[in-house]
Amino acid sequence: MATGRVRDFLILIGHAWICLDCRRMLLEETEATLVGHKLSEFERERLMEMADSSFRTMMDLEAATGLTAEEVTLAIDHPRSRLRHFGKRVRG
Image (tube, rainbow, N blue to C red; front, top):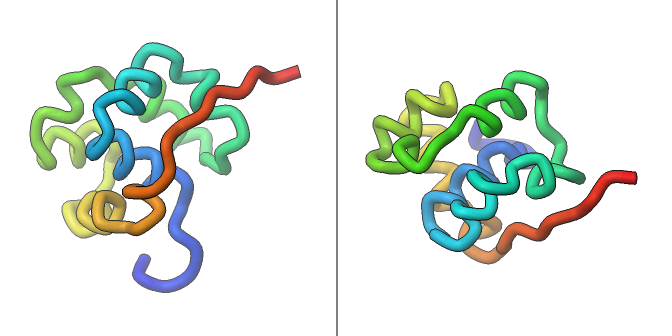
């Protein structure tokens, strides 16, 4: 996990932990927020099922995402997670 490109899933999770406005967008307009991100079907399903309670603690976030504690920490600490706000795109 420490080498190579960090998955979009980790960047989305990390930024949603940090930025309450983007978290709200992810939870309320999930499909529009996910357009253009490279996600597996598993990752997409996890994001679609998340709720505000998924972000109460890091342990809740681990359970909601299926990530390990190390992966959640990597996601939150990654520079792209801190710098990049979510945008919405419409398919079609």
